[in-house]
Length: 185
Image (cartoon, rainbow, N blue to C red):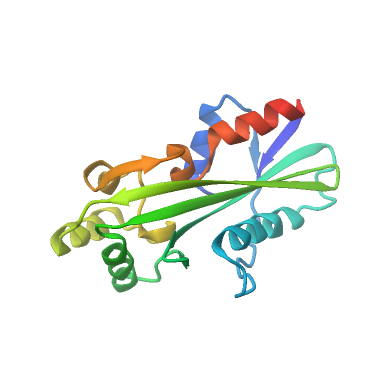
């Protein structure tokens, strides 16, 4: 079965490679907006499905994998920061608190879309303003939901614990994806 990863995320590419799955990357720009009334889980599932629908009818002999990841706190989605100030605001909000990371995956095959998601709870210790500034200056987390990457410095020094899938926080819940793919093939 030919597998298409419809993502430009280097983290998703790396994780899928580590799973030992051969794939081709074919990405398209997709409007990631969603209806405001959707809760975070419904919103991330909506976006993953939207990403899959772009490929409807295009790769009829392949399995297309799309994904979207959001960080949520107090029922609100923290997207990707617009700039340093926005990143600082997000990280300050996460400091000393627990939040959730939700990744939805959509699998498109033969005109049918299957969607599933994984939720991981992440606990940050209190971060000082200088730690937040250091992280932003050295790691430029502007392409990451919630303004951080768990696989970077901040994940090593600031995350006290996670409950759930580590790879989900990176951007692809590999154990869950493997389980779904094994059931299909």
